[in-house]
Length: 405
Image: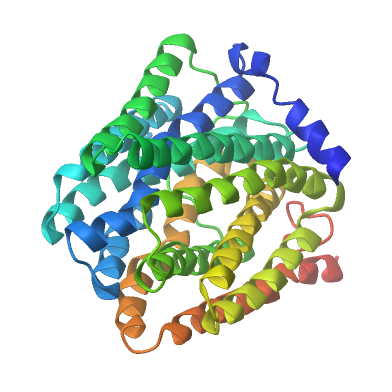
C-alpha cells in the first residue's frame, strides 16, 4: 500500500497542473473549491455556537437549508440548455466564493440561513457538474485514477485552507469575518485563472439535454440516497459534538481537520487504484462495513480523544465513495451522464434536506440515537453494495441481471 500511495502521489507532479488538457482543468477545479468550503466548514460550528448561540436544533436547521440547492440539482439539466457545463462550473464556484467570503458578517439565524443558501447554490451546482465533466472527459480506465487524484487535490488544498484558518486565528488573531474573506478570495482567484487559461473542452459524446431518470439505474440511485443520508449525519453531528460536548475551539477543529486532510490526501489515490484493480463492489463493501462500526462507536463514545479518533477514521472512508461514480460510468449510456448528474445529486440530497433538522430535534433528547440512525443507513448501503456485479456494464447493472444472463 505504501508503494502504491507514493506512486499515486508522484503522478500529481506540479507540471501536470500547467498542461492545457481536460485532466489538468479538472485538477484546478478540484483545487479551487476547498479554500472557500473548507474554511467555512472549519469555523461554522464555532462561529454559530459563539456568535449566534445555536443549539443542536439550529445547526440542524442551518444544514437542512444548506442542502436545499443540492435537492434542486436536477434543474442543472435546464440550465445547460443555455450554458456550457464548463462555464457553469466557473459561475458556481464564484457564487460559492462570494457566499463564503461574506459569511462572517451575518450573525443572526435568518441572516446565516440566507447567506448559507447562497453559498450552497454555488457548491451544489459545481459538484455534479464537475463529476459530469470528469466522466465525460475521462476514459473508463483513467476515471477511477483521476477521480482519486482529484480527491487527493481537494484534500491537500483543504489541508492548506485549514492550516490557514489555524494560523489566522491562533497566531494572527484575525476575526471570523477576515478569515472567511481570505478563504473565499483564494477560491475566486483560482477560478478566474482557470477561466482565463483554459479553452472549452468538447464532450466525447453529445449529451442529452434533459433530466435523465432510468429504471435500470435504480441501484446507483439507491447508493446515492444512502450516501447522502449518512454523510449528513457525519458532517453535521460528528463535528457539532466535538464543539458542543467537548468544547474544541477553532484552531483545535482546524488541526483535527488538517489531520483528516492528510489522511484523505494519501488515501484517495489509493482508493482510485484499488477500484481500478479490484472493482467497485469489494471497495464499497469494505467502506460500509467500516461505517457501521464507526457510527455505533459514535453512539457510545466515552471521551474527547475517542471522538476525535472516530471523526478522523470516518472522514478517511469518504475517499472510497468514488466507487459509486465509477460504477455509474460503467453502466450508463455515455450520452446520459450530464442529464443524470443533476438527478443523482438531487437523490443524494433527498434525505439531506430533512434529516439534519429532524435529527437536530432528536439530538436534544438522545445524541446516541442520532448516530444509530447513521449506522442503519450504513447497513442499508452495505446491502445495496453487495448487489453490484463484479463487472458492471449496460445490461448488467446488478448481480441479479448477471444471473439472468
